Image 1 (cartoon, rainbow, N blue to C red):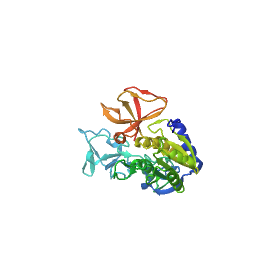
Image 2 (cartoon, rainbow, N blue to C red):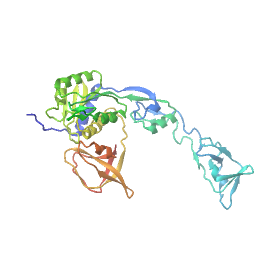
Image 3 (cartoon, one colour):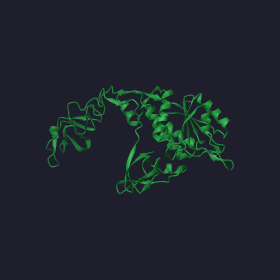
Image 4 (cartoon, rainbow, N blue to C red):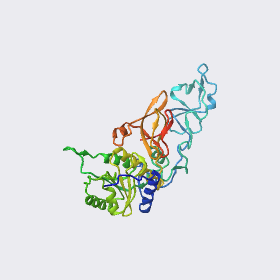
Length: 387
């Protein structure tokens, strides 16, 4: 009779175990790519601007460059005629002038322009170096390159950027019941690979998805050995909950070492962390929501920390719609939707089941309840991690 009891380690212990394994064998390479292809990649070095942008004081809109002092006291009742001006387009240097009068706010008459209000120095002007100054750090090593960092790099004088080359990852589902198309009873569509692939591909991981392995220990161990000859990290989906057909831990033990089997997170407790031929092998729970959080909150957190990568997790402060209970001793991830309620963000709790994939589809984010937490009161201000 199998022992189905989990001795779950704390989530920080699990993350530390993943980091330790990775650092012992995996060194991230580097590659130079176009900044147009660098979205959601991580810079492998600091970048300093070689340009100043704008390179001079420039017009912020189309109009007439003027000296602001000459416009003082102009009103609708007593407009002023300005003879000293220059026609400029947006982005043009204003040279010796210090303000811009938009075309629509002036009338051209007798070689001059009539204005109907005063302008202050630097009004409608972008100042030299307002965005980027030469020598300024524009991107730091390990920083996630969003569209804004890509713009900064281009403005700073770069057309290419050196980024970390992410590892080659294999995803191996397990289970005789898993198919791409259901043809008979007792079959299930394998779709966790879609969720997994999107979680990692967005950060540049090189992902390969494989056909499900049958519930056969010899077949599974053979597949693990073969995949680890080519891939840096192996994820095995399913077969981690210590049921009769849950063979992942046994297969990893035969080939290497199971370091963790059971993590105090909810959902995602059955997660396995192991090492085979020095490489990281993780057994992910079969339920999609459990798998999602095991990858996002255990693996990715540990991976980014191991290599000094700054994910820039977006969060939103929200008001909890109702009292929320959690089991003490597990780090729990509560899916929520965010609604606008009289000008405030209201976090509405969604279904908490590990198999309810629709709760992820409807969720805007999730709340993390720490291991030592068991209650959040209605109206509490909570931090929501956006999905």
